[in-house]
Length: 352
Image (cartoon, rainbow, N blue to C red):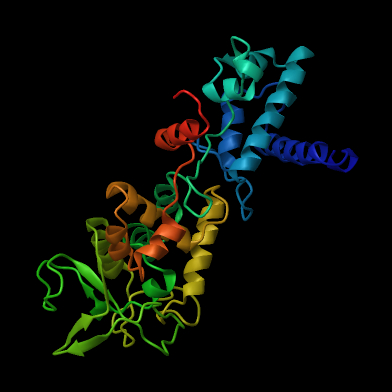
């Protein structure tokens, strides 16, 4: 079918429809007897979030659809089955897909002078949007989705420590076990609560290196100095889960993150490995390409929101060199925020 389609949207729809028809054959179904639940199962099989068992695996070894492709697939399937329903084939499914909804405020804004129909066509197969406050930030809810998607306690630790600590990936992969003071009143005496010392070290076997170059040293077997970062209870929990279940005994290099497979199993894990792990998990979860530094942007913005825009608090929480860096790079406003909207309308001379 796809080879007979035209260019652009027609070809895209044809490929998506061929994939669905192959799934029907795989499940022993046909367009005449497929149900609404079956079509929802298919959407789940290609990457959508649906609260039901998906049946036998589909598309093994292939990436799940991203959110944009899922929306296109939903439109394609609705059009396909509505066309069949108009021809008298599987009218019951056509009725379930041919839903209506009230117009949203966004619909009204898109329509001239707010004149829209009393109801609009709705697609029950359409996935939910994953909105980002800023392109450099994680999509909303991405951390929970990624944590459920990764395959090991080490990878869950990475997600938690990037999310709650605002670490750069080079800092995280360069951590040593001695740098972690995860009990109240640690011997270093530099922070009463659980914390980590980010120490700049050159020549590590995995090529990791902290960007910050604060002075540090080992005094009487205790790490002191470096960049001190607070550690959350979730970070501590994932640390002990990893150490008790996966960390190799007798490791001589003393670094926190280690490779778990291949000939270099047990050796320090390189930052590039962490980047690829996060990227793969993001694609499997339908989030698109996720980068570790997006966690840092989201962390900085969350701290700014929680501290009413206090740049000093955000600077010290994330370990930035100055408040100017936080202000220029990370202090992004949500363009849909009511305060932002009111400020613009005041400038425009509109009545708020």
